[in-house]
Image (cartoon, rainbow, N blue to C red):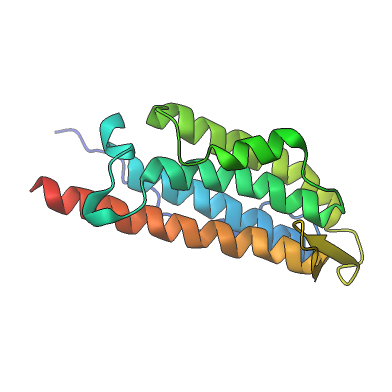
Amino acid sequence: MSTSPVPAPYVEPWLRGTHADVPAVGRAVLHALDLALDDLTKWTAGLKDAQLHAQPLGLTSLAFHLRHIARSTDRLLSYAEGKPLSQEQLTALKSEKLGDETLAMLLADVEFAFVNAAERIKVLATADFDTVRYVGRKRFPTSIGGALIHVADHTQRHVGQVVTTTKVLRALRK
């Protein structure tokens, strides 16, 4: 009689002891991105590529949310760094609703964006969080700290939409 190993229980990123070298606020943002990637991987597992581009019940497609998570993270960090958006970022913004990428491609884009973001967040985590920054052409005021926190909450909001849309897609298959 063989026994299967019992899988280790899931431990959320903020309890794993990771990113210990990063000050608390930056570490929390990094943990939010780690949790986002965990959830995106879990909830999209087994989906067909065609499902990514569907809009069940008029909901926004999963593909849009995955593209938007990756690209908005980059844009928000540019604002946190005090930089205007580049032409490349503006062009990518305008095309977020378009594309025919596979699930593997989209998850790879998110993972790449988060790896890139981690290095930037580590630098920003040592800054004065009250330093004023501006967002968009209208130059809405925020701060480095506000932009960093928004990276986390904005990402989690879209992950929640991915989870909900995935549940709808699976319910409609039954």
